[in-house]
Amino acid sequence: MPSKTSRTLDTLEADIRKLRKKARQLEGKLDDNFTYFQQHSGTLFVRSLLPRRMEGESVTGNPIIDPFLQNERLQKVLARLADMLAEKLGDGLNWVINRVFKK
Figure 1 (cartoon, helix red, strand yellow):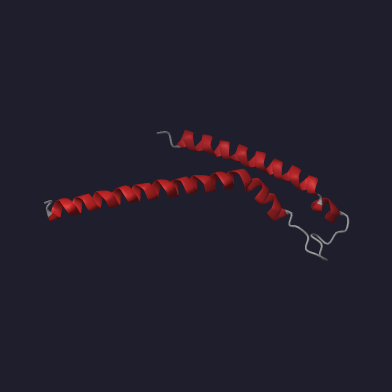
Figure 2 (figure 1 turned 45 degrees about the horizontal axis):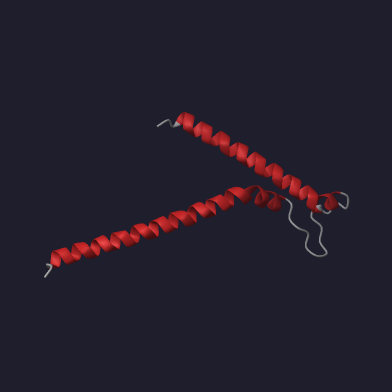
């Protein structure tokens, strides 16, 4: 018959395995969420700058500029541009961090 100490160690080891499995699952979710954020950050940024017009309202109040800001093609181009700029900025920051904080 196993002693109380060995049963406790077995229980602790089982708990550790469960916690490690849960940690791996949470790391996977975090990675997925960060990847989603990286892929869509430019679009989210542009959408925050160019909000959709609510019914009966204008974005800037200027009847000449509003149709340009509401143009879907312009918003898609600006979103792609923002994505490219965000990617270049990220690459630049990674380069700086790697140069400053060499391992």
